[in-house]
Amino acid sequence: MLLPTAKYCGSDAETVKFEVNPADARYQTTDGRTTGASPYVLNAGQVDRDRPSEPRRDANGKITALGELRTRLTGLQDDINEFLTQRMELAKGKKPKLQGNQAKQEERIENEIKELLDGGDGEDDADGL
Amino acid sequence: MGLDHSLKLEIPFENARQATIAKEVLKPDPILKPQDFQVHYTTAKNVLLVSFQSIDDRVLRVGVSSVIDSIKTIIETIDELDGPPISSSPTI
Image 1 (tube, rainbow over the protein chains, first blue to last red):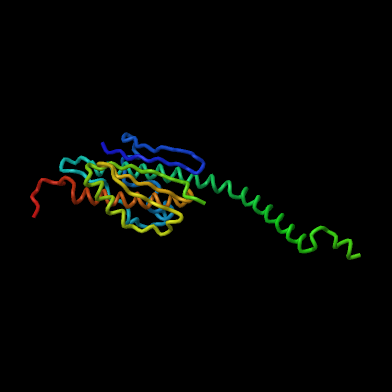
Image 2 (cartoon, chains in turn purple, green):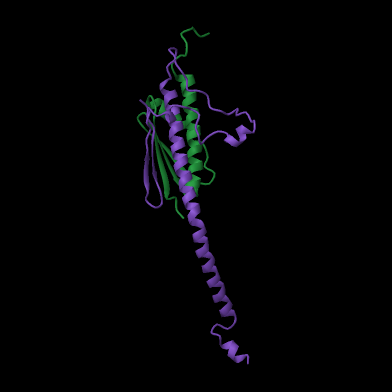
């Protein structure tokens, strides 16, 4: 039995192993959930001409070993895509916080530059009188 | 920022010859932004090993899914041209 596997390792040292369960329906189709045309486009009446072909069958009608491999790889691809999309969402959630910090930092630097250009130690204000 | 997001893919084929064909077909594909994303193909007997390294999860997702799409096409092609016959009728 040909079972593809995958292992992810993130920058935060998170490690995830992806495995295929051949009995699960998600690993028995060539029609992936995260690939192909979006439901929005299909509902608008568009015909998906790039839809993947069904897994190949031999003379006895049994799906070939490579046909099965293709269905399992489709399921594994969905697993990886969904996982990475989730990670992307999490990273997006973190971004505004980082941007907020960055904005504060930029404001601080800008104030420091302004102070330096004005004379640096506030003595100008006193001299100006 | 380094390529600190990685994914290793292992795809077993029916034999070493098929795994090598897949590797040789995939290898010439150029990587458009090698500073952001890299792919390495090797084989171990009948298994195709694909190693991805990326700058972030978004680039990794796009690159991995694209390579898997290519691998699925290769599998389908090998199955069509090198697989068992679909009927017992003689070919011309």
